[in-house]
Amino acid sequence: MRILLVEDDKDVAAFIVKGLREAGHVVEHADNGRDGLFLAASENFDAIILDRMLPGGIDGLRVVDTLRSQNNNTPVLILSALAEVDERIRGLKAGGDDYLTKPFVFAELLARVEALTRRSRNEGPQTKLTVADLEMDLLSRTVKRAGKKIDLQPREFRLLEYLMRHAGQVVTRTMLLEGVWDYHFDPQTNVIDVHVSRLRQKIDKPFGTPLIHTIRNAGYMLSAEAP
Image (cartoon, rainbow, N blue to C red; front, side):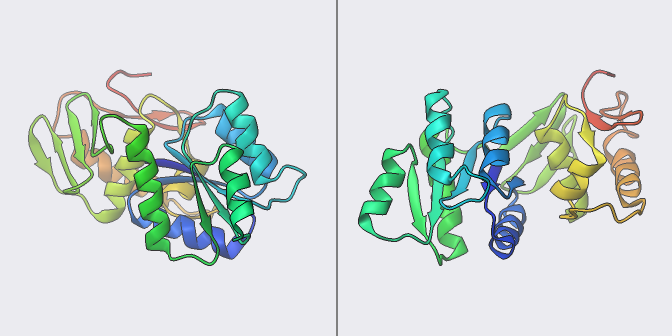
């Protein structure tokens, strides 16, 4: 799943992002209501985890209320230290789909998010990604191309999953550093180039049509057709 986290507490945010990514999800993070609203309104997410109290003049209730007024029905789990029944009711009436109080157990947060997305999709949770003849099974953690199984290291799997979830889009170096390596800065290494090269050796080289394309001065794109 692709999940947006809007949380201003750095430690809480790092804890949630790490857990979600380890569970195989792609996470975008905003630390204030204004940026969170912009991301939620301009990009597609399977779920939003939204802190109730946020800096920047736009709190969580205003974020979700604005989204609902724009007919954005992305499932929203509200996080808050405000545990009173009246506060929970306010959060749900504003447009939240669920309300979880702090402190919380990560396993419960994950279960609630996954339950929200299951209810929002008639077909149930996404378990497979497909681009051309490349298939990824998210449950068995296996990859096949043209029916042939491809063995990947864990980091290679995460890199390919990220590319497949963004198939047809230009994926920048910054996006890969944050989405696959959890770096929120450029460590000035060639780690991305090395892993993309290794991935190409397994995904593209044995087959006739390359899927991983370099976009000059921009990043990479996974596509059945050359951009």
